[in-house]
Length: 322
Image 1 (cartoon, rainbow, N blue to C red):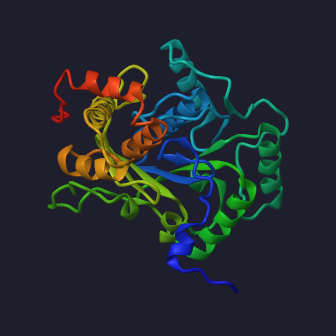
Image 2: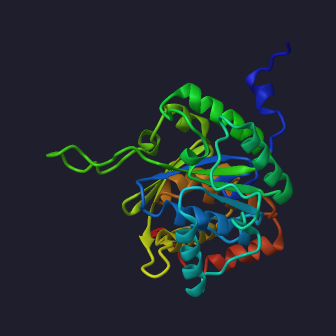
């Protein structure tokens, strides 16, 4: 068996690090979207899917357009149909890349158990082979298997089947939290760590690449591929979809970082990054990485770059970000 020094390991070619939503949903990644019952998780999952289907930015993160398969096993068909009709009547824009199974089809199954029934696993494999989605949303995780969700052995078996079925897809699992209300006489917990909030075995949290916790007026993110983040969320009273006031702030922040970079010459991107970390407030890592890619294609010694830099010096760099 060959061994590598850390220098040799660092020199290895990079693996595929593409994303369906930048630093949010990796291609072939696994995301656990959790929240209390009946608090809007399905609407948020639908928004994830529409962002990918349309290739639209999501909370200022760029998206790559792709086919999305939404597997709805939690909400009764009549209620889900009513939701979709109301979204359409409210002029929410859909896209043909976003698909669901036709409940009128003779082979349609409203209930499945991938743990006990091989036929159900083959059913999903056939669907994946036909649809060829880049993203699959399972709503909810608990409704596709039987057994004790608190058992690590049961969960390991379930996720082995899931990984076999969805080999080439990113998967978002919609799942419930355990009871988050405090005992009588105790104050509401102000901040809840997503990794501690998921219901069932800790195996579930350990098996995914990121956990998204929708709780109260916040969407909190814990991830293996990006820094922790928390976004303010608000519910649209008509569509019941979620809005993200932080989007405008992030857009302004990115523009300020771009201006700061172009306002003078830097010996390297790393030198600028160190400056930005210390001088510009709380710049998310995904913005810095995106700009690094953007500026890596710019020749800093070129005449066009000097012109842009001179133009940028005509106004002060705004680092307030508020």
